[in-house]
Length: 455
Image (cartoon, rainbow, N blue to C red; front, side, top):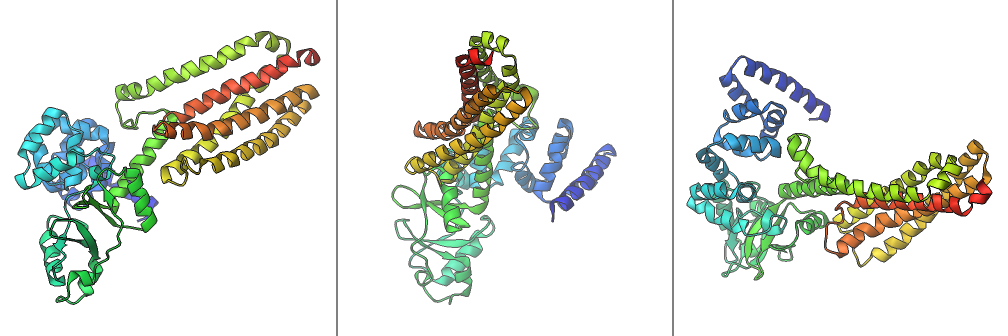
């Protein structure tokens, strides 16, 4: 289904849904939802008003509700959870895979989480509690306990039986893991080999021994890189003793990629990670205001620099015309570099070990771009104002500030990485502040130095 077709489907379905809501035709709504994918239902619920969200969600059966609630936005989820009884919420969570259940429970208030855990089926609650002990951004935090494993003494027919028995409660079975008597991971047998191998042959004859694996404490960004490097659909997770404890599937990795990408974008822009277009105004203000205050502080620093050169600006009013140009181009150059560096760090292409080569390359890029843009803006200034010296000052200031912006876009995220902080954390705010101050200082400073010749 193409994007246009999907949008058309959503538009038509939303129109029909609103008509059914207006006519109180709940049975028809239930019938409509029974034919729809949980993601499409979640999309429609997100668009509706709060009262309608809760009403429509209450019409879903427990199994579909457990899928839909994982797809809706945080704002809609919070509103729906407020109206759900603890009993129904427990039933919904009990239907989820262990990793989804653990993530969901971790976001609940402590008292509500304890109530839910107490109501989950005994055979499931231990798996969920084990997953809750791992940080949410590690392999242990995103893995699921549901998997298919057989001992290394098993035959192919035993592996087939294990898959059949697990199929009801385990989704997306791509392979069977092979363990020894102590539970250590020995290897894996892809489902395709299990289907085509002779039933009487040992699983070890079809087993792949040299397989990628991660320990529970590995960061989720590294997990994404491993999936990408080896083109995986599933990845075993082991403890410090190499015992198999869970698996990560490609759908989990897609969620992590979206989460990490969104997180980087939000942090570069100075927006709270859990802010969204559907968030309430109070929440959005609370998340954005601290960064705006910080930005105000940096802007006041720029204003302070300009204040030092008030007399120069009074004597050469044309300086005020070109000040934003110098600061703006430096900020843009820094922003270009910043995006590349943050992305390189996130994908593992750039590390602190190979950063020197990148720094040298960006230094050359900054000089080249600074000279190229400086020449053009200097000529424009001369043709416009008829002042050759002013054009030369503008050329020098532009070259300096684009170089500073490029170096700032490189060094700020690398420094944050070295300090073991998120490289995207407010980087754009720091780069903009630095290029504004540097741009005004270089341009107005050079103008002051040559003031007698300008006037």
